[in-house]
Image 1 (cartoon, rainbow, N blue to C red):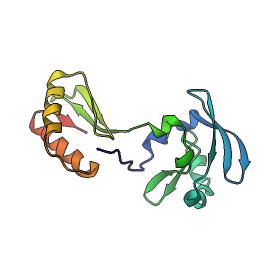
Image 2 (cartoon, one colour):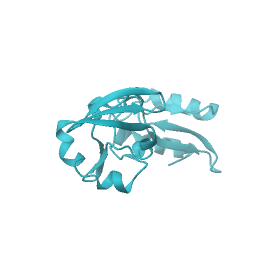
Image 3 (cartoon, one colour):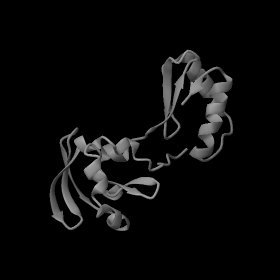
Image 4 (tube, helix red, strand yellow):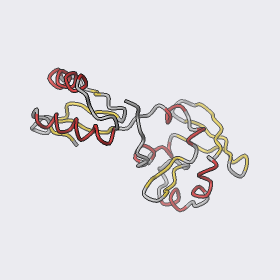
Length: 157
């Protein structure tokens, strides 16, 4: 199942410490560095997001957020999606956390609906879940998966 970003911005709210603008090289272009890898990259603001990028009130009030993150209605959007560094392109958010009935964390599901857990009971149930015909979209599949997990004694959130 393909990952579908919800554009909630949660993953980018602390990337301002990891993606640094070194220099503005043009009206909408920047020399940047991915601090965690020490990798330089160039970024140009996507043409369809230039208008929202002009408003600097969001990054001014959220100093730890990625400097390229901007609100667009109810969404928080990356304005350099085309040029974003590899760490951003490959990131998949946590779509669901799974616990036992006492609240002990057992694992989580990423946005691509992949389970990350060492718990054998949960992994066994997950194998049964993925063998079933599940809804095609993430927005339909997540509640479906959550219902099956809950019916089997797990809690999700």
